[in-house]
Length: 390
Ligand SMILES: Cc1cc2nc3c(=O)[nH]c(=O)nc-3n(C[C@H](O)[C@H](O)[C@H](O)COP(=O)(O)OP(=O)(O)OC[C@H]3O[C@@H](n4cnc5c(N)ncnc54)[C@H](O)[C@@H]3O)c2cc1C
Image 1 (cartoon, rainbow, N blue to C red):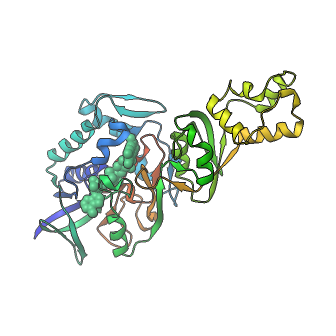
Image 2 (cartoon, helix red, strand yellow):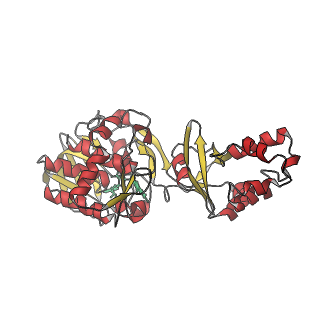
Image 3 (cartoon, helix red, strand yellow):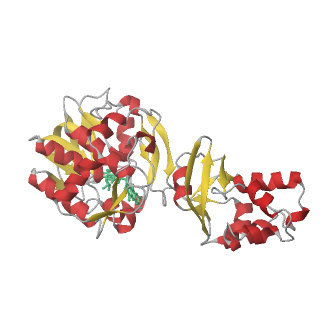
């Protein structure tokens, strides 16, 4: 049996960052990864260019049952800190929009950077490692298909449930269960929404139509595009709001976020022109036709609407209520909402309060970022925090 200071399970974003930091402190570190290669999610992230952080990272970009938990880690390792690493390795990058930083070339440069740093600090990484069991007595014993290890600190960095084909597993939650840690119920986040049967019939022909809207769920709202798909709605505004929604909720879509329909009406009320011709100025024609054909709005001459009808139109166009029932699930979700209960962990070190030496970092923890580089920033920051303590 090999004795190691720190074993990290999962060679993704958070695990590799933690390994680097622990290695820098002179700890002997082994990373165990069940895939044949490291960082599969990093490689495909950001359309292959990895949106590795967001320079406008704020606490309000994160969801958790405990909205204070992530503050300490995010303050100790900032987007600027990760950019410094990226610059040290001369990885060219750019801001795409809204503070989102992407590699100019390929996400592989982020993986190379992390592997180089691991190498520098003598971190050993074993791929194709299947963990058979984890036993805790005075230290942790980890049996894999290849070897048996004993370690003082065990870090669970096995990620969430999204995209099983990339190696996502429920390993982290199983370990949390094994050691009696509470788990906040998980669900897919940053995920496309699927229509119910009735709405699918009404809107599937709109696939490909994109509209700049404001999408709202209770007090949370996002002002970005939605995209009609064959199955439902996607696009950044839907992905963002999906992390806040549970099945059975309703979302409200403001189709005219830049305008006031009452003012549009006042300007045009004397015109003998159909409503649709006015709406064509503001919305894609296919969408206007679908709303009319499906009797969600009535298409008449502007002059012929009475006040009540105008109020009804305005209410619809500024707050189309859409049932949020189904999503495309973990196969298409970018993240997992929920996870290891943050009340079980130290916010400074990510160590379990119940089990000394056991750490949880990254997406397996009940911390979820918005779309736009915030999830990697959490992975780096939580990995960094644990790396100072293991
Ligand atoms: C398609 C897609 C695109 C994304 N794009 C972005 C983006 O551009 N920007 C952004 O901020 N976020 C993005 N994300 C989210 C981001 O990838 C994750 O939040 C982040 O990778 C989480 O890091 P992690 O270390 O917790 O988990 P991961 O990076 O998922 O790493 C977990 C590792 O653990 C391994 N593992 C799992 N189970 C076991 C086991 N039993 N034994 C051993 N190893 C195991 C996995 O194979 C994996 O290598 C994207 C996600 C997806 C799915």
